[in-house]
Image (cartoon, helix red, strand yellow):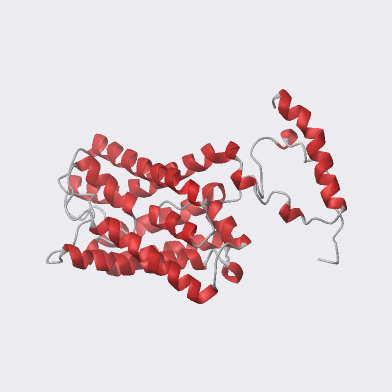
Length: 296
Protein backbone atom coordinates (compact mmCIF):
# COMPACT_ATOMS: atom_id res chain seq x y z
CA UNK A 1 0.00 0.00 0.00
CA UNK A 2 1.29 3.48 -0.84
CA UNK A 3 1.89 6.21 1.77
CA UNK A 4 -1.22 7.95 0.50
CA UNK A 5 -3.24 4.77 0.95
CA UNK A 6 -1.89 4.27 4.49
CA UNK A 7 -2.73 7.84 5.42
CA UNK A 8 -6.25 7.59 4.07
CA UNK A 9 -7.03 4.23 5.69
CA UNK A 10 -8.00 5.56 9.17
CA UNK A 11 -10.19 8.25 7.64
CA UNK A 12 -11.82 5.67 5.39
CA UNK A 13 -12.53 3.40 8.36
CA UNK A 14 -13.96 6.27 10.40
CA UNK A 15 -16.13 7.33 7.47
CA UNK A 16 -17.59 3.86 7.15
CA UNK A 17 -18.20 3.56 10.88
CA UNK A 18 -20.11 6.84 10.87
CA UNK A 19 -22.19 5.75 7.90
CA UNK A 20 -23.05 2.49 9.62
CA UNK A 21 -23.90 4.29 12.86
CA UNK A 22 -26.48 6.48 11.16
CA UNK A 23 -28.01 3.51 9.41
CA UNK A 24 -26.63 3.58 5.85
CA UNK A 25 -27.10 0.10 4.31
CA UNK A 26 -23.85 -1.75 3.67
CA UNK A 27 -24.96 -2.31 0.10
CA UNK A 28 -24.60 1.44 -0.53
CA UNK A 29 -21.06 1.80 0.78
CA UNK A 30 -19.47 0.68 -2.49
CA UNK A 31 -22.32 1.66 -4.79
CA UNK A 32 -20.11 3.74 -7.08
CA UNK A 33 -16.92 1.67 -6.93
CA UNK A 34 -17.44 0.70 -10.57
CA UNK A 35 -16.43 4.25 -11.40
CA UNK A 36 -13.11 3.69 -9.62
CA UNK A 37 -10.52 3.56 -12.41
CA UNK A 38 -8.17 1.44 -10.26
CA UNK A 39 -10.08 -1.62 -11.48
CA UNK A 40 -10.46 -0.62 -15.12
CA UNK A 41 -7.41 -2.54 -16.30
CA UNK A 42 -8.67 -5.73 -14.71
CA UNK A 43 -12.07 -5.34 -16.32
CA UNK A 44 -10.65 -4.73 -19.79
CA UNK A 45 -8.25 -7.64 -19.46
CA UNK A 46 -11.19 -9.81 -18.40
CA UNK A 47 -13.10 -8.88 -21.57
CA UNK A 48 -10.02 -9.45 -23.73
CA UNK A 49 -9.27 -12.84 -22.17
CA UNK A 50 -12.87 -13.99 -22.19
CA UNK A 51 -13.41 -13.09 -25.85
CA UNK A 52 -10.07 -14.70 -26.68
CA UNK A 53 -11.25 -18.02 -25.22
CA UNK A 54 -14.65 -17.76 -26.89
CA UNK A 55 -13.19 -17.12 -30.35
CA UNK A 56 -10.49 -19.73 -29.80
CA UNK A 57 -13.26 -22.32 -29.52
CA UNK A 58 -15.70 -20.90 -32.06
CA UNK A 59 -13.14 -20.31 -34.82
CA UNK A 60 -10.80 -23.09 -33.78
CA UNK A 61 -13.34 -25.87 -34.24
CA UNK A 62 -13.86 -25.02 -37.90
CA UNK A 63 -10.13 -24.64 -38.52
CA UNK A 64 -9.36 -27.97 -36.85
CA UNK A 65 -11.92 -29.71 -39.05
CA UNK A 66 -10.47 -28.07 -42.15
CA UNK A 67 -6.93 -29.00 -41.11
CA UNK A 68 -7.64 -32.66 -40.37
CA UNK A 69 -10.47 -33.19 -42.83
CA UNK A 70 -13.98 -34.52 -42.59
CA UNK A 71 -15.71 -34.32 -39.23
CA UNK A 72 -12.85 -34.59 -36.77
CA UNK A 73 -15.14 -32.51 -34.56
CA UNK A 74 -18.81 -33.48 -35.03
CA UNK A 75 -21.26 -30.77 -36.03
CA UNK A 76 -23.07 -30.88 -32.70
CA UNK A 77 -19.82 -30.35 -30.82
CA UNK A 78 -18.88 -27.43 -33.08
CA UNK A 79 -21.96 -25.44 -32.14
CA UNK A 80 -22.20 -26.49 -28.49
CA UNK A 81 -18.54 -25.92 -27.59
CA UNK A 82 -18.75 -22.09 -27.77
CA UNK A 83 -21.85 -22.18 -25.57
CA UNK A 84 -20.04 -24.22 -22.94
CA UNK A 85 -17.09 -21.85 -23.12
CA UNK A 86 -19.34 -18.82 -22.58
CA UNK A 87 -20.92 -20.50 -19.55
CA UNK A 88 -17.48 -21.24 -18.11
CA UNK A 89 -16.28 -17.67 -18.69
CA UNK A 90 -19.35 -16.21 -16.98
CA UNK A 91 -18.72 -18.45 -13.98
CA UNK A 92 -15.02 -17.81 -13.59
CA UNK A 93 -14.75 -14.10 -14.32
CA UNK A 94 -18.18 -12.62 -14.81
CA UNK A 95 -17.82 -10.83 -11.47
CA UNK A 96 -14.82 -8.89 -12.79
CA UNK A 97 -16.26 -7.25 -15.91
CA UNK A 98 -19.76 -8.62 -16.40
CA UNK A 99 -18.44 -11.03 -19.08
CA UNK A 100 -20.02 -9.26 -22.05
CA UNK A 101 -17.69 -10.89 -24.63
CA UNK A 102 -19.74 -9.26 -27.35
CA UNK A 103 -20.05 -5.62 -28.54
CA UNK A 104 -23.79 -6.09 -29.05
CA UNK A 105 -24.19 -7.06 -25.38
CA UNK A 106 -22.16 -4.06 -24.17
CA UNK A 107 -24.32 -1.71 -26.23
CA UNK A 108 -27.52 -3.37 -25.02
CA UNK A 109 -26.49 -3.01 -21.37
CA UNK A 110 -25.67 0.66 -21.97
CA UNK A 111 -29.03 1.29 -23.65
CA UNK A 112 -30.77 -0.28 -20.65
CA UNK A 113 -28.95 2.11 -18.33
CA UNK A 114 -27.09 -0.72 -16.60
CA UNK A 115 -23.66 0.16 -18.01
CA UNK A 116 -21.91 3.55 -18.44
CA UNK A 117 -21.70 4.64 -22.07
CA UNK A 118 -18.22 6.05 -21.55
CA UNK A 119 -16.91 2.53 -20.89
CA UNK A 120 -18.43 0.97 -24.01
CA UNK A 121 -15.63 1.95 -26.49
CA UNK A 122 -12.89 0.42 -24.35
CA UNK A 123 -14.92 -2.76 -23.82
CA UNK A 124 -15.52 -3.11 -27.57
CA UNK A 125 -11.83 -2.59 -28.35
CA UNK A 126 -10.85 -5.20 -25.74
CA UNK A 127 -13.34 -7.70 -27.20
CA UNK A 128 -12.12 -7.15 -30.75
CA UNK A 129 -8.49 -7.41 -29.67
CA UNK A 130 -9.14 -10.68 -27.86
CA UNK A 131 -10.88 -12.09 -30.94
CA UNK A 132 -8.04 -11.01 -33.24
CA UNK A 133 -5.39 -12.52 -30.96
CA UNK A 134 -7.26 -15.83 -30.85
CA UNK A 135 -7.52 -15.98 -34.63
CA UNK A 136 -3.84 -15.06 -35.05
CA UNK A 137 -2.86 -17.86 -32.68
CA UNK A 138 -4.99 -20.39 -34.55
CA UNK A 139 -3.53 -19.35 -37.89
CA UNK A 140 0.01 -19.55 -36.48
CA UNK A 141 -0.57 -23.08 -35.16
CA UNK A 142 -2.83 -24.60 -37.82
CA UNK A 143 -2.09 -22.42 -40.85
CA UNK A 144 -4.75 -20.63 -42.86
CA UNK A 145 -7.41 -23.10 -43.93
CA UNK A 146 -9.20 -21.22 -46.67
CA UNK A 147 -12.46 -19.71 -45.38
CA UNK A 148 -12.58 -21.99 -42.34
CA UNK A 149 -13.36 -19.99 -39.20
CA UNK A 150 -15.38 -17.31 -40.97
CA UNK A 151 -19.10 -16.92 -40.38
CA UNK A 152 -20.74 -17.01 -43.79
CA UNK A 153 -24.26 -17.44 -45.15
CA UNK A 154 -25.22 -21.06 -45.76
CA UNK A 155 -25.42 -22.61 -49.20
CA UNK A 156 -28.01 -20.77 -51.27
CA UNK A 157 -28.58 -18.14 -48.56
CA UNK A 158 -28.23 -14.47 -49.49
CA UNK A 159 -26.32 -12.01 -47.35
CA UNK A 160 -29.55 -10.13 -46.62
CA UNK A 161 -31.25 -13.31 -45.43
CA UNK A 162 -28.26 -14.10 -43.24
CA UNK A 163 -28.48 -10.62 -41.72
CA UNK A 164 -32.17 -11.04 -40.88
CA UNK A 165 -31.37 -14.43 -39.38
CA UNK A 166 -28.67 -12.84 -37.21
CA UNK A 167 -31.14 -10.18 -36.08
CA UNK A 168 -33.56 -12.85 -34.87
CA UNK A 169 -30.90 -14.99 -33.17
CA UNK A 170 -29.22 -12.01 -31.48
CA UNK A 171 -32.58 -10.68 -30.33
CA UNK A 172 -33.10 -13.93 -28.45
CA UNK A 173 -29.57 -14.00 -27.05
CA UNK A 174 -29.65 -10.43 -25.74
CA UNK A 175 -33.19 -10.91 -24.41
CA UNK A 176 -31.92 -13.91 -22.45
CA UNK A 177 -28.92 -11.99 -21.10
CA UNK A 178 -30.98 -8.96 -20.07
CA UNK A 179 -33.63 -11.18 -18.54
CA UNK A 180 -31.33 -13.22 -16.29
CA UNK A 181 -29.62 -9.97 -15.23
CA UNK A 182 -32.71 -8.09 -14.08
CA UNK A 183 -34.77 -7.84 -10.93
CA UNK A 184 -36.47 -10.96 -9.63
CA UNK A 185 -35.03 -12.97 -12.51
CA UNK A 186 -31.44 -12.07 -11.62
CA UNK A 187 -29.82 -15.50 -11.32
CA UNK A 188 -26.20 -14.64 -10.53
CA UNK A 189 -23.79 -17.41 -11.54
CA UNK A 190 -26.70 -19.65 -12.59
CA UNK A 191 -27.24 -17.19 -15.44
CA UNK A 192 -24.38 -19.01 -17.17
CA UNK A 193 -26.69 -21.96 -17.69
CA UNK A 194 -29.40 -19.87 -19.33
CA UNK A 195 -27.04 -17.94 -21.60
CA UNK A 196 -25.02 -21.01 -22.53
CA UNK A 197 -28.16 -23.01 -23.24
CA UNK A 198 -29.52 -20.35 -25.58
CA UNK A 199 -26.25 -20.15 -27.53
CA UNK A 200 -26.17 -23.94 -27.91
CA UNK A 201 -29.80 -24.17 -29.06
CA UNK A 202 -29.47 -21.22 -31.45
CA UNK A 203 -26.37 -22.80 -32.96
CA UNK A 204 -27.96 -26.22 -33.37
CA UNK A 205 -30.87 -24.95 -35.46
CA UNK A 206 -29.58 -21.61 -36.77
CA UNK A 207 -25.98 -22.30 -37.73
CA UNK A 208 -26.72 -23.78 -41.19
CA UNK A 209 -28.37 -20.51 -42.27
CA UNK A 210 -25.95 -17.82 -41.07
CA UNK A 211 -23.35 -19.49 -38.90
CA UNK A 212 -25.19 -18.26 -35.77
CA UNK A 213 -22.50 -15.74 -34.87
CA UNK A 214 -24.62 -13.24 -32.87
CA UNK A 215 -21.34 -11.47 -32.10
CA UNK A 216 -19.55 -8.89 -34.30
CA UNK A 217 -16.20 -9.55 -32.60
CA UNK A 218 -16.42 -13.27 -33.38
CA UNK A 219 -17.12 -12.55 -37.07
CA UNK A 220 -15.10 -9.44 -37.88
CA UNK A 221 -11.82 -10.56 -36.26
CA UNK A 222 -11.42 -13.66 -38.47
CA UNK A 223 -12.44 -11.60 -41.50
CA UNK A 224 -9.63 -9.16 -40.68
CA UNK A 225 -6.98 -11.78 -39.94
CA UNK A 226 -7.87 -14.08 -42.83
CA UNK A 227 -8.42 -11.22 -45.27
CA UNK A 228 -11.88 -12.34 -46.36
CA UNK A 229 -14.67 -9.79 -45.98
CA UNK A 230 -17.43 -11.79 -47.64
CA UNK A 231 -20.83 -10.71 -46.26
CA UNK A 232 -19.14 -9.01 -43.30
CA UNK A 233 -21.78 -6.30 -42.99
CA UNK A 234 -24.48 -8.84 -42.20
CA UNK A 235 -22.54 -9.86 -39.09
CA UNK A 236 -22.13 -6.28 -37.96
CA UNK A 237 -25.60 -4.88 -38.65
CA UNK A 238 -27.50 -8.07 -37.75
CA UNK A 239 -26.32 -8.39 -34.13
CA UNK A 240 -26.53 -4.62 -33.60
CA UNK A 241 -30.14 -4.49 -34.79
CA UNK A 242 -31.03 -7.61 -32.82
CA UNK A 243 -29.64 -6.04 -29.65
CA UNK A 244 -31.74 -2.89 -30.21
CA UNK A 245 -34.91 -4.95 -30.62
CA UNK A 246 -34.10 -6.93 -27.46
CA UNK A 247 -33.67 -3.72 -25.46
CA UNK A 248 -37.10 -2.61 -26.64
CA UNK A 249 -38.61 -5.94 -25.60
CA UNK A 250 -36.92 -5.63 -22.19
CA UNK A 251 -38.56 -2.24 -21.66
CA UNK A 252 -41.97 -3.67 -22.53
CA UNK A 253 -41.45 -6.65 -20.21
CA UNK A 254 -39.77 -4.97 -17.23
CA UNK A 255 -39.80 -1.22 -17.74
CA UNK A 256 -36.69 0.94 -17.50
CA UNK A 257 -33.37 -0.58 -16.51
CA UNK A 258 -30.70 0.81 -14.21
CA UNK A 259 -31.63 -1.22 -11.14
CA UNK A 260 -29.05 -2.60 -8.73
CA UNK A 261 -29.26 -6.20 -9.96
CA UNK A 262 -28.93 -5.15 -13.59
CA UNK A 263 -25.94 -2.94 -12.82
CA UNK A 264 -24.21 -5.68 -10.85
CA UNK A 265 -24.67 -8.14 -13.70
CA UNK A 266 -23.57 -5.71 -16.41
CA UNK A 267 -20.65 -4.16 -14.56
CA UNK A 268 -19.42 -7.03 -12.41
CA UNK A 269 -18.91 -6.75 -8.67
CA UNK A 270 -15.17 -6.07 -8.57
CA UNK A 271 -14.70 -3.47 -5.85
CA UNK A 272 -18.32 -3.79 -4.78
CA UNK A 273 -18.88 -7.27 -3.36
CA UNK A 274 -15.17 -8.02 -3.15
CA UNK A 275 -11.86 -6.23 -3.44
CA UNK A 276 -8.67 -7.59 -4.99
CA UNK A 277 -5.57 -8.20 -2.89
CA UNK A 278 -4.87 -9.91 0.44
CA UNK A 279 -7.44 -9.41 3.16
CA UNK A 280 -4.80 -7.82 5.37
CA UNK A 281 -4.46 -4.96 2.89
CA UNK A 282 -8.13 -4.04 3.14
CA UNK A 283 -8.38 -1.14 5.60
CA UNK A 284 -12.01 -1.98 6.31
CA UNK A 285 -11.48 -5.67 6.97
CA UNK A 286 -11.41 -5.27 10.77
CA UNK A 287 -14.55 -3.14 10.97
CA UNK A 288 -17.23 -5.29 12.62
CA UNK A 289 -20.53 -5.70 10.86
CA UNK A 290 -23.36 -3.75 12.51
CA UNK A 291 -26.33 -5.61 13.98
CA UNK A 292 -29.31 -6.03 11.67
CA UNK A 293 -31.49 -2.95 11.40
CA UNK A 294 -35.10 -4.07 11.69
CA UNK A 295 -36.24 -0.78 10.19
CA UNK A 296 -34.93 -1.72 6.71
